[in-house]
Length: 277
Image (cartoon, rainbow, N blue to C red; front, side, top):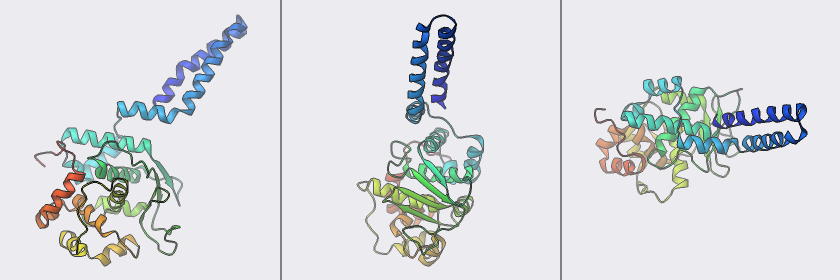
């Protein structure tokens, strides 16, 4: 991390000040005082310093995450080379700016974190910045879970807006990601709900008179099947319909071209698509 590198000269200064004060003259203790003060400030402000630096010099994701994207993410593969680089940089910033909290296991596998980061990046790719200001805590369970908002329903995803927390079942995240189009993408679905709460003035399509029929026409999924897969008795049908822009783009474009265009104005970043895809 960049902030740790900034500590090195002050560590050297502290050692030099300690040596000179002990061996030469106590007047050299000012070096030690300056070094300790500056080092403490860098340590306290380390997260902000790193965020400032990496926003100006965005990092890339590591090799395994890049391989995951290239093998399993049709959205990523359809981007131009410049679009892919920007996408990966946005993901890397997402990793830096969000707190992943394991629940029910010691640590969240990094590929599951990557699936969440990829979904969040897709939904926000046409907006400035990689972070959702009110949704920076992500709780991941191995499987389905109850929650304070739904204590009697074992479900697989949730956006708890009151506390700004997203909750996911890790195995179901991976299942949807590794088999695109076969299962609802619960991460994209929830991040669309987050974005809609954060930016309600975006040109969201008007509520459908029959969203269940539209979802069934585009994806082949019945509402009952989606409810069973997510595990809740209620479903945000508008957000689920929007998520099909990512998982079933050609089916949506063919069946509802105007709807596809409306979502494109929200989700599609200009000049990042590969014209050969």
